[in-house]
Image (cartoon, rainbow over all chains, first blue to last red; front, side, top):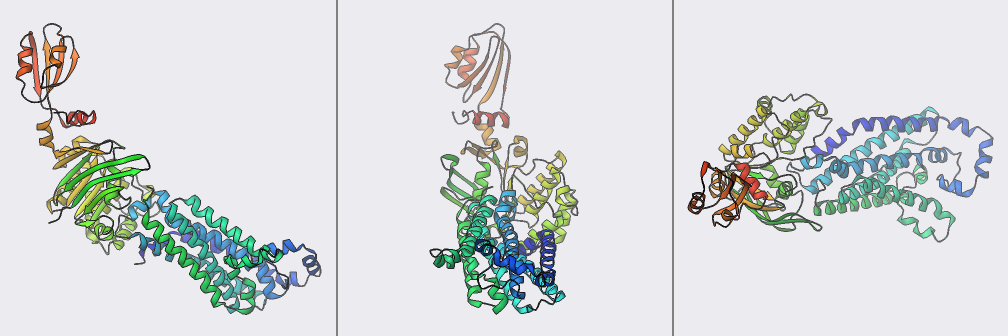
Length: 266
Length: 299
């Protein structure tokens, strides 16, 4: 019962390979400059002089020492770069899963096989999990190896915790893309809705510390449960992970219901 | 044995647009039913309701004794479908695609695929994006037949195929019917329907206008009588005659569509000097066109 999931991953292997090369290169380039940044005297002053808003948007926080190993790795890699790439990747593939096949027209022949619509959503989600898992594994491997190369001093386990959180965050928005695609059958909304919500959620999380009235709303942003700096310092947060998984499953369940009820747009 | 397909009062509306209106038809095991109508008449809409791709606004569709929606997965296990707008996975080879679908069907005999590919003269190992439209159509035909389904639903199966391959597909249809499978196929080619269908269903603007055997449709249809007179004749008196449904032409040549006894027409003709008289059965195309003008059920 995993043939469609396997097919989905196999069909994406070329895209996955390019993404893997890209993310590995970006992680490496960022990490290997750590020694020169750390040893440069001007940088500390630059960070302190930069406006609060800019630091907030770049994933910084008041207590964050941007020149500590975890702070540097977070600021350069995990706070923005990795979730951004993962979200684009996961939203793209989540939108392609059903809406993509529906728009191209391959869905009609696929569903002529003895495959129920619920099973199709389930297998497409499973395929997405597989793709995001590979992407995350590459991210973790390149962080770990580049960290070793410059003797960064953040443990592989802490990096794994941050990568898992990033993967779960990507999966959540990928599942939202799957839901929007399953409900509408169109790639436009399947990409647009999760992309817009992701930007909103990121801004909410980043700007909340600057505005008191925003502060309590942070908990509705998935990025609140991502908290990559904490992961790099403290390791896994099972509660936050469970929250991301739970919301993903809710999206998937909603996708199943929405897809099962409507006419295919053929 | 339950009907292979039972459509009861099917209506499908898209907003205010009616795709299919109050359509009912049956298909018995071993029977070949040709579903005839021009593009946009509602053939594909009907077929997609059978496949549970879209849901009826009203009415029921039962396939192989099961409700089209509730039993969808069980139905599709026993059904072979060729869509009218065939879209295949471009990057796979035909063999990869057929293996994928075979796995989704819980395994399909590889020899069966090879035999069919040979009969259809299809090279299985080329990527689908390199195939001509005819060869793509063959891949579609192959995936519909490869698991020897009990019901075949074929939407314009022979479009894109050359006459030789059309014949090969017709032979596959006949074989399937011989082993007891029901075949529901749509077409706008009358000759094709006449050649392989036991019965014909004619659909016009979403409504079924006739379902019968080709010979019964022909028997029911008006006879065509063509007459050449020695001198120009006024067509008006002929229009008043009860069996005459239509009069065409003028001057020395008139053509009549006659339903029922021709006696009154012959007596009226006898008042003029007749040079030539020709009476014949209409061919399926004329019957079809008559239904399309909305005249077919006038008698």
